Image 1 (cartoon, rainbow, N blue to C red):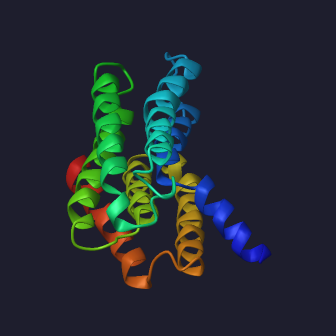
Image 2: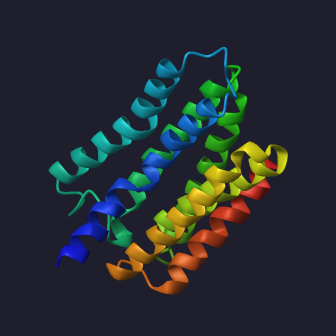
Length: 195
């Protein structure tokens, strides 16, 4: 019982909606944007990519268009994926016009991962957590290739990706093929969109 509760809490705290906020903090911490004030950047990301989509999901739950804000059923994922895609695209577009262009590259990659998830979702339930992890880790791998200072972040992200996949399997939200496909699709889409 405690293990299930821990896995549920871990799954919520590591939901892909939070990944862009974490990447923003990593890029700012790594000194990518010394001229940019970090708090407005973090606030814009938190509001546009976390708060607005989450509020829309709560609204859908209130309207009974979703049975749970976690969108466990494949049929309930369409609207949240559309909301997330819109939020990612417009936030990426905003940051592409600032000196924080590197962050916009990550957001565009996440946008294309969301588009891929939207299409795949019509046919199969792929792990959105694993999709996000695949994109996150791959983007950090690209950054590590250019700057070894990102290596500790990459190692930590890979450990978390394994834990997240394990939690999703433990909760029986996905089977192993859905998790591994999520990692693979997230990685491939990120490579294609970034390079």
